[in-house]
Image (cartoon, rainbow, N blue to C red; front, side, top):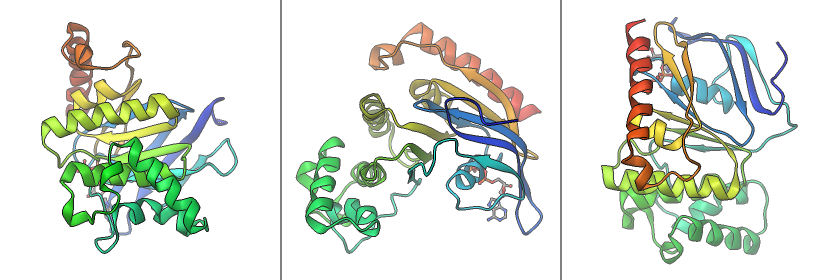
Length: 251
Ligand SMILES: Nc1ncnc2c1ncn2[C@@H]1O[C@H](COP(=O)(O)OP(=O)(O)OP(=O)(O)O)[C@@H](O)[C@H]1O
């Protein structure tokens, strides 16, 4: 099967077996439409992180292939832990990927300041990670991932360790960033509520081995806000996704 038209990435019959014999993912076909926000949802161990890591080139495939229809797409990765360098300021942490790509100091600092402003941390540029809250550290991590203007942003449960209020706020911030910049996003989560709130599409995976169980479009208003979060429509969508997840867990 060729890559789907308009896809930023296409996985075809992708299988991953780890060296210890664990079959983490088997026969996965998945196309991510350019500019879309897709959540990967599923029980612990169903292979969500493995899929993301294979897309990022951090884990080799055992079989199948991953096609990138657009030449040399830029990728950004946001991990569950913010993974900031403790001895560098927020500004230098955000500027790091730009430094690695060879951008001169003045240019990368200018860009890093813009990115920190985008995530609401303009005032914290000179602070070290130990001086930032968990939510602020995650904002720095997102700013760092966006600094290289990625075509595809891969997020692996970025908000799982945060309290609910911070999580809701960062959900909104991430959506605003996505609306403004329209990068493609693949967001791994355990949370039905988060997946429905953020996504245009929720891909439910089942375990043993990891595979695609359900593929659900989320037909909801373009503006996702607190009114949407408390609407009957949101509740109904969450119920549908929740039932698919229960089916995937029983499968
Ligand atoms: N480096 C590794 N070596 C061996 N097995 C691994 C490795 N990484 C993951 N696995 C196994 O592969 C399977 C899929 O793991 P993965 O982390 O992709 O799942 P997940 O759905 O992201 O889980 P979680 O939601 O708990 O993070 C699990 O059985 C896990 O134990």
